[in-house]
Amino acid sequence: MERRETSQAHTPFFMRPTGRDRIGQRVSWLLTGMGRAYLAFCPSKERDEILQRLRRSDKSEDWLARDPKLLDRILAEVRDRGYGTRDPSFLGGSYGGPPRDDGLAAIAVALVDRTRVHGTINILWIKAAFTVEKFAARHLADLQAAAVEIVDSLRNSTGRRPAR
Image 1 (cartoon, helix red, strand yellow):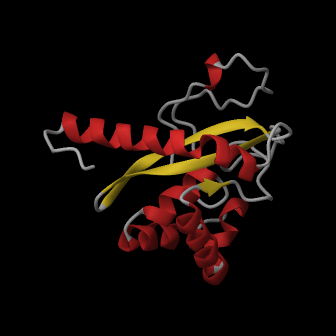
Image 2: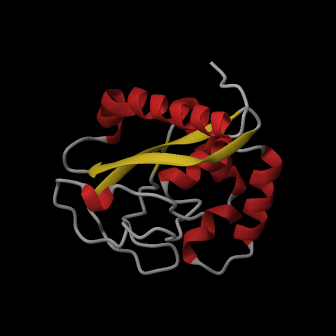
């Protein structure tokens, strides 16, 4: 998984430099809200293929791929909530790099289009400002609406009719 767009470089809030404003940066499938949202909502065949590759990985961030019962429980919780969150052990940093506490929290939703997931979108915030639950209560509906708008736009750009 990789970052294809970000607005972090334009935030009016001070955030510790993370390199997160780099397009193309790799993102953890298993420890980030974005990766978990994607895996929770993508077709099971695609999820199984991704997890097979992650099970063979030597990266410490991919340990969860080798604990299918725990991972299934986590992904079921993501589906029930409708959004993914960071693993409590994930403090920031790039995939495969050293962990770096960025002081942020996140929620992410999948860009679901009938039988596929195009990607995910997320919102980051300074974790001392809100709990995940309070932030989601306040902003999840807007994030989900943005996801629907993006998917509709993708359908329109390919000539497919938007779903409502």
